[in-house]
Length: 363
Ligand SMILES: *Cc1c(COP(=O)(O)O)cnc(C)c1O
Image 1 (cartoon, rainbow, N blue to C red):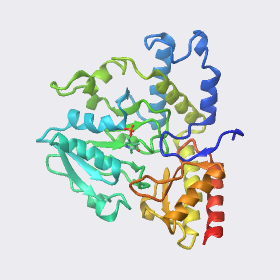
Image 2: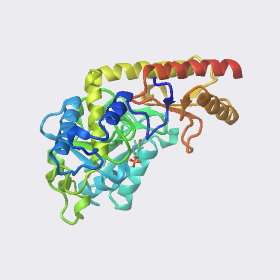
Image 3: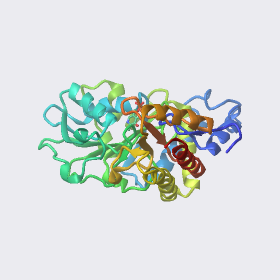
């Protein structure tokens, strides 16, 4: 770690790999001998074209997907996808099915509801979103256009550890907070999207990875910028793309490849999460994890302390120890430590160590 950098446990925007930041810094003023920075270059220039297409290719390679899938870059955040998905894929007669497993899952469903196109196929709200619904709990409607899941629940700290079986119904996943963190059989998903600011880059672009058959044709009444077809037909260059964000996503994808890809990343991520969960489990109840053990997230570890006063103290002292952004979401309270791909193993070691010392001093 650089002397003046700290371990940043923020949920998003969040840490980026130091190597990626340094590379971007080194070529910032003169990108590939163009005499310009990537921020100033035309999105029609050849140098940009290579960045754009290489990022797409590297992402498909990391996910092990073939040419029946394509990658789109769209602005408006994951939140705009909550609207575009029901607009493109559902109708009042063929409703989008949703699993309510947390805040963003519910937000996605509410947008479909505004359009009169939503249906709740399962929910763990009654259990305070402590687990993600199991396969047995999922009841698709007869008219299901798709099943939408939020694969990692950033605020509650839960994550799917299975891929829902949906038969012929397309499976759509919001992977904003766990994209490219572990290998999965991505071919089971028809449509995956992620705001990149958690695991892949700076805020400003959403990554969509979807079957081409989902993207080729959008409903006719839709405005141009709300149609996936527009982005698909124009290689996400119908209008000016957020070139810097896509460039950073490309660099992060390369970094992932250099680390051994998703399998290697998942091994480190598992070890990182185990350090923090062990600190919770071995604390004799001083720390209480929010998530049920079988739904625990590898990316966001959520827990409470015996009192709100101690939680405030914990956050303040963590910061003094070079551990920032450990406070939980206002809707849940407590602590949340986000340990995405770019969080080094040493950061989690430091956190676990701090948790043990804090407990010893305050219980
Ligand atoms: C952060 C987050 C969102 C919201 O993303 P924006 O890009 O801010 O719209 C949606 N879904 C999940 C799972 C998230 O973690």
